[in-house]
Length: 289
Length: 293
Image 1 (cartoon, each protein chain N blue to C red):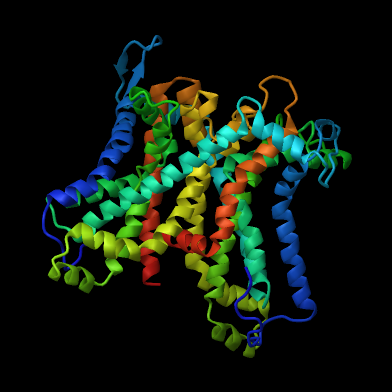
Image 2 (cartoon, rainbow over the protein chains, first blue to last red; image 1 turned 90 degrees about the horizontal axis):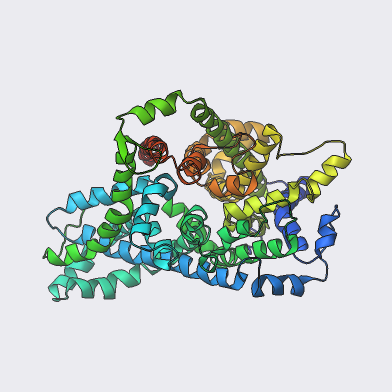
């Protein structure tokens, strides 16, 4: 990101000269430290196995990039990484879209209608804010198993969209929409759904996009849940599949392929975060409020 | 709570709210109810019947040295993760805030690790400290330090803490940086005119103004350390050595799925539920206060 203002009138307390360079040096050092694990993984994904198993491994990329990534994507260890990427993509998009759709609708109902049992439903939804899936894994697993949804996309997605955060975000946003708009729609004889589709939905676009970024990363990075319910390797997601690539006994792990998989696993969320940085920061700050 | 202008009808809103209510009921309320129900029973050794034990599972857990140890482990772990992720983030944010140009570039670079899943972060750090091939452990060995997190409790804890805190540095940096940018320049300059040097300004003006952000991040990071670090623990140590890194969430998993002790696992879920509830209430109370800050 480039700064919008090239040379703002410097305040009197900003450092310049030597102090400024010290600040830059500290920032660069910080970035280097934070980046080092990713750099090392990238290097490991471009060298041969013997280069890694005879430590110390090189700190500069080798020439095995295509070999390792080809091997990972094409065959992997248990299942081709390409398959796991597709599964992760479906799961992440499914969770993001599913959560956004159900919460757009339920927030609309809560804000724009009076109907029997409304407060009960509101509090029922509110309660789901409180319990991460990690806490209720055993019974949720039994529900999914009972529905025969193990090793299915439905089983991966549905339990993770039962949460109220998105509903509350949209509710807060709808509350800021001027009453005149709904009034005008009603006077014009527009049906509630027409108002929703033509007025409310277009106005919510920025919020939807920001929320999509957050939820995509949330879904992509899920670990425990896919670990439990995808016993069939062809349904593994990439984030949980990496652990399965380590041999169980004393065999040496295929580090170049595992590290190539790690890099592949972080590329989609990193692209989403970097390319939608402004929206992402906004969504993050909003959703935690 | 609702608009002054509302639409008429009750069938439509019920249909609109139905998907969320149905999904919450099936995948949230029913399992949560099951957890509470199961926590009152113990299954017989063959899994054929359940025996009602009242609060027996809870009494057993609270007197179980392993469970108490896990509580302590979780407390140490989440305190360390919170510290290790917040202090460097605040430091970097303060430095970045003083830059006239380039702060945005650093932000873009520092944001990366946030997108990396905890489980992947675990694999990356495991790779660096692997006892056989790890680069860092190799150099440590050359310096005469024999790194072995597979056997050494303290080293295992250190490694999972750093791997868990790593991605959170990005997150905390974003919030601290945004908060610092919002501190009015005039206040800082007034203090500078009065002769307050940088550190004095930081301690007496900037840090107090940051306190809402700091408290918020404290709660959020503790919640993260409690519930979202399963992937790190599972990939790096699997709770070992000798349960030294078995945090509460990991224990729910290992007792319930590996040990098949459903009653105890359910009781642990209920205890965690109370912990989450307390943290949520605390967070809401705090946010209420922040509005009037």
